[in-house]
Amino acid sequence: MTAPTRTMQPWLPIIALSFSLIACTSKMTPNPTDTTSSTTPGAHFTQDGLLKADHKVQAFASLNFENLKDEMAQGRGEYLASLETLLGVPEDRHDAFAALVREHYPVLFASNRTTPNELVSALNQERSADPIFSKALAGN
Image (tube, rainbow, N blue to C red; front, side, top):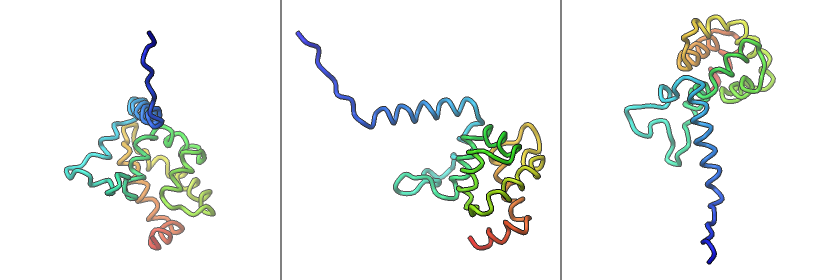
């Protein structure tokens, strides 16, 4: 007698990997529910279930907080480059943005208890106060 064979759904490993990554990163970084929780169910998501554009930066910062912290101190790295893209920083201004975050690192990470929410808020304040990036923000 042969054992029945099971066919694996092609999307199942992707879902399992996604949950594994979320579980791993949530243990290494601050709790992302601070960012994605709301009193209004679905307030951060589109009808298609995608994260709304204005919440992508916050979610990214929450899930990659320690990597961003390290790379912002150095003024370079793939997480910093991804953040620049999410913020809509034009490619020709990536170097200037990296210099901005490196120079203002003590303000962006005011204490060892700085949260992702506080980082994004401080980053937006620094961008709006900078002559180069305030013009870009006004254009958005």
